Image 1 (cartoon, rainbow, N blue to C red):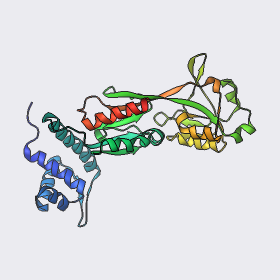
Image 2: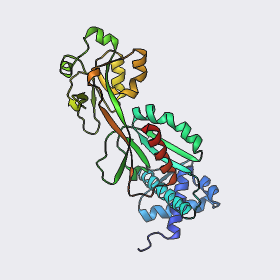
Image 3: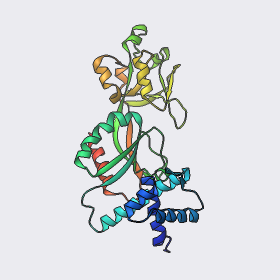
Image 4: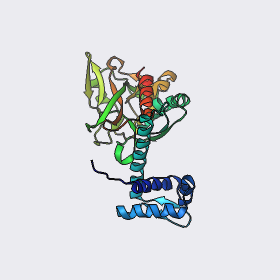
Length: 303
């Protein structure tokens, strides 16, 4: 294997990352014991070698360009992995520490994952967690994520999916809606009802409802004038307002069912679920801080 990076180039990359992190040459210089001019010259040499502008410089601030942001995310991740590998090889990584970046679906994040993290932080006070709550698929390499949680198996075979749980589904409606429309007794009667739809962002297709009949899970198409895309909580809000029936995750509406704000229907056909899994690259060194978070979430949510 030929050398691709000499000490000068690695040093320039590290100084660039420090400059981006501290948003200025002076602060980066203080962190390294160099002069601001030396840091600036090092970053300029890196830009010249790459042939791109990484930083926008003004008299008051330094900020990343679009290309610089992508380069910074990848370099920061690479430098973190190098530091982690050195600590692990020398036996210094006795306790997990450092930053973990994780992407979560909005509803699952708010209702299932975020409530668990304060206890995790108490157990592992040296681990920092940066969360992105979004329903879009993320690029682990380009965006520098360590983990993601998703409700569908990723098509990329290089990613590992570790199941957290099968989240139960229920069909619900507000009492006000059921006073106007008789509750359905069979799936066939859904044709007579307004069903709040959910549109899958990745395909733009309406998601069929999952029901259990004779012990088998079946997909049942529904119809309705109201559709929500990206955020499944919109379905719940519309159902609470009496817009129609909605199928959603039980963990989202447990409080509504207890209070009577929503009523479960088609109870003889419940039992279907959808899986949620932790997703991470299978071809990347996994730091201890990431491993302990994975194990913690699997134990907590697997129950």
